[in-house]
Amino acid sequence: MQKTSMKTTGTALLLSALLAVTAALSACTAAPASSAPSPTAQPSSQEESAESGKVTFTDDLDREVTLESWDTVVSLYGSFAETWELAGGELAGVTEDAVEERHMDLGEGVETIGSVKSPNLEAILALDPDFVILSADVATQVDLEPALQESGVPYAYFQVDTFDQYLSMLELFCSMTGRDDLYEQNGLRVQQQIADITALAKEEETVTGLLIRAFSTGAKAKGADNLAGVIMEDLGVDNIVARHDSLLEDLSIEEIIEEDPDYIFVTTMGKESAALEALESGIMANPAWEGLTAVKNDRVEVLPKDLFHYKPNARWGESYAYLAKILYPGLTEEIDDILAQE
Image (cartoon, rainbow, N blue to C red):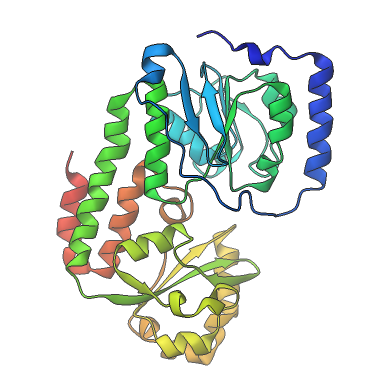
């Protein structure tokens, strides 16, 4: 495919863009990426890219994006890099998390262009990309927009917190690569797994649960704004945080005792051992913790990061299956049969 004319920018303009983003990054705060993101990006026509070599869609910062080429693609988020590969695309550059967290086998010729929170704009532009994929949830990446716009590099922002959002991104990417077979394999097949597992769960008695996200300096409860929280909700778990908003900011043993959940699930951020040590020396050190039903029944579960902290992408079905088998052990054989189906 031909490179777009948008990229014929002079050296002076590029240097100006680099200086502008350096200043923006140094002043960056943790402000939300977008107060009201648009629906997850969708191509305006599923066949447009295959027929005309061009695709137009609206990204998650409500920007209309038109791409004429995607031979050289750079992703600033490992999960999105993996989704592009799952759609049959090739990568020219990725952030460190693609290897360190997702353990992607990138092969020769793929450049590392910084970290998720500190991407290297100069390294990105040096690759002369046709398309840069960014996260709408990372403030420093949103701050790159003026420089990317000025340099003429085509780019788009995405937000993926649920399976449906992943499926929408995969559909867009597969429409670009022309790989309908990979959309079926890595998207629709997984969608059916989730539908079958949640259908089984709906027949079971409702249980109560608490989701805790632990990190090295503390812990907070999480609700449906979290990957694991969404899965809990879809599987019929009554998350007690829905009735105790204060748990989102500070775990209170009194409120947990009041609800006495059937299950307690834990996800970790950063180094898992440090997060669990902080949890054990914090709320778990309270004598009342041992009296909780979930603790007495050995129903405190630390969920694996690859399925419940990092975006599971083509493994979303495994995430639902993992949690469903804990909640409803009598369904284990049926759930395994669902996963085994082609």
